[in-house]
Structures are given as C-alpha cells and as structure tokens.
Image (cartoon, rainbow, N blue to C red; front, side, top):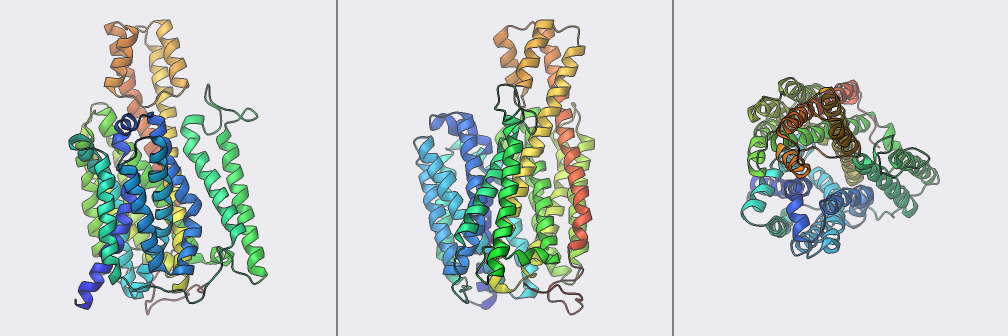
Length: 538
C-alpha cells in the first residue's frame, strides 16, 4: 500500500470513529416513542437513557484522555472501540430499560470517553503539523455530518426495519474500525504517568453534577421551580446543582495546582489555562457546539412538529447541511493552507450566526419546509470552516505528547457546549411558547373561561411542544366544540413559531458574544514560517 493510500486509510478510520460517536447522540431522537414501547418503558425513561449517555461521557472524558497517556493512544482507541461495540450489541438486544441503560448509557459512554481523546492524539501523532488542519477538519466534519444525518438514519431504520438495526450496524462499523486501525501509527507514552485519583473524582463529580443540572432544566426550570416539580429553599434544584458543579470544578483546579506545585502528576495541568491559544480554541469550541446544537434542536422541531413531516422527510430536509460542511472542512486547508485561523474562525462563526438569523427572519406560520434550506447551507458552511481550524489550533498549542490530555479537555468542553445549547434552546422555546399560547388564548372571547383555566394549569406544568395532531387528540378527549378547537389550533401554531424564534434569537445573541473571543485565536497557521508571538508550549 502506498504512503498516501495508507494515510487516507488512517484518516478515514479515525473519522469513522468520530462519526460513530456523534451518530449515537442524534440517531434515536426520532424513535424515542418506538424504543420506549419496545423495551416496556416510558418516553421519559428513554430520554433519561440518552441523558445518562451524555452524563457518563462528561464524567469520564478527562480521565479517559489520561488513560491514553498511560497505555498508549492506539491501545486506548481500540479498547474504547471494543467497549463501545459491546455497548452497541447490548443495546441492540436489550429487553428492558435496565439493559438499555447498561449498553447505551454506561458501556457506550465509557467507550466514547476513551475513543474521543485518543482520536485527537492519534491525528497529532499520524500527521505532520502542516497536514493537521485538513485532518482535523475531516474528522470534525464526520462528527457534524453524523449529527445532521442521524435523524434520517434513525427514521429509515425505524420506519422500514427496527431501531435495533441501528445499533447492530454500529457493531459492524466498530469491527471495521478495529480491522483498519492496524494501519494507525501509535503514539506510545514517553513515560508512564499516574492517574490523579482525587482529581479524577473531583472533575467527574463536578462535571457530572453540572451537566445533570443542565439536563434537568427543561423539567425542573432554570430558576423558578415548575408546578409539581422539586424545590430546594424555594428555588429550582437546577440552580443548586449548577453551583455545586462549579464549586467542585473550582476545587478540582485548586487541587491540580496543589499537585503541580508538589512536583507530582496532575490530571490536567493548570498551566494549560494560561495558554492563550489553547484557551481561545476551547472557548470557540464551546460556543460553536452551544450554537449549532441549539440550531439542531430548533430545525427538526419546526419540520417534524410545526409542519408535521415524518422522521424520514425531516432527515431529508436536513441533508443540505452536510454538503457545504464537508466541502469547507476539506477544501479550505488545501486551498488556503496559510490563511489566518483567526479570520477563518471568525468567518465560520459569522456564517453560523447568519444561518440562524436568516431562519429567524423566515419563520412564519404559513412558511413551508423550504425555508430551512438556505439557513442550513450557511450553518453547514460555517461549521465546516470552524472544523477546518479549531482542532489544529487547540492541539498545536501544546507538545504532541500532551495531545491526549488536550483531547479529553476539548471533548469535555464540546459536550458542555452541546448540553447547554440543547437545554437552553429547549427551555427558552417552551417558556416563550407557553407565554404566547396563554396570552393568545386569554384574549380570545371564543374560548370559555374553564378551558382557559385548564390550558393555563396544563401549560405552566410543562406540557411539551405540541403538534397539530397531538393537540387535536387532546381537544377531542375533552370534547371541545369546533370553534374552540380552531382557536386553540391557531393559538398553538402562532405560539410554536414565537417559541422557535425566541430560541433562535438567543442562539444568534450567543453567537455574537462568541465573536469577542475570536481574538484569542492565533493569526497565523501552526508551523507557519510567518508565525510570530507563538505562545509557549506547555
């Protein structure tokens, strides 16, 4: 096999690993009800399983990066694939919720925590610095495309076969990755570091509690507790969980500083936080994932709920995102190898913001599915541009032997951004929808007072984003007359659009805030002869 063919195979193998990890976060969102019925649980039970997968990854991502530094990155990658494949197989045959949790949440979560940091390190170990932007671009693009086509894959499998075939297919992909991983050059540890157990516990608890609080925000409320929801000292538990998580993370950083001052091996060197380039890359990763995952919440809800498209049709409509994403991730490093990362990151983020802004302007009650096409093309172009730069920016900020450590931190940051973006977009959308619906209903004289009162009680308690079919079923159940039913449908259609617009407005605002941090990104490419003021490698 020629060197170029071997290099391409290595890159495709690592990209396949990233694709698989990202696919699992989006593929089953369209089949939650089907999965719940099949394993004899509730929709909330399956949603909890998905949330637990995110939680496990958040808890073990930083220690997972350290494991790669101890046993070797290639071995950690392959071990993670074996664990992940075992989890996928367990999920495919799961007869009940407990087995589903074991396979999907625990085993796949542990596998992902080993795989993702190792991928970052293996790209650094298998490609010279000048080729890394293109390599990281393809790997990141593979993950983003998986998120985009996940609903389509899940919709196809659920509609024509079974959701279990998705996880069976993941086992086949894992076997293929293990087969071709032999071509991947290892990045063996220079020395054998020790795991800081106290730091691992503090980081795991801090991140886990914080992410758990974020995930429960839609059900419990961010600040004011929802009716019939828990309250600690009159405030939603989410506030206390976020504060506890932040406090534990502060304790973690203090402990790591203490360990470093004593000359011992910290889990994460606090000195990394003084590296301007690394902090800039991680910050932009956080904002990118917060914004793009928020958009990925809004667009499928608009297509599947507001317009009533099937899971398959929704997936097809989201596909335009993938083309500019892949093109930008692959072409930019080739055509513009010396272009300023700072300018490209700024341009990429502006494209994502413009995509959200165009969709915000285009959404109306009478609009059709075609309004998402241009926004998706813009968001895809922005994501591809960011993917072509950010991975190389973060890893080139440190010595190659620390790439797995940086990979663990990088994937922790992206998971935090994705969790917060998803939860924040959802909660803003539901809160605005509720307020708009209640206001419209209250001002409509055709709706009797008792119906208004019942709607207020139900919506404030947290009734989710309703489709026309779901609302019709609820109205038929209470025997609502035709004029009341029509008024409720009109109010719901208007409220849905208002809620979606509010979520998009927040995402646009968040994206604009991120532009203030672009200055932390270096102005020249890693390894460039023109590069000046290079930050010291930690």
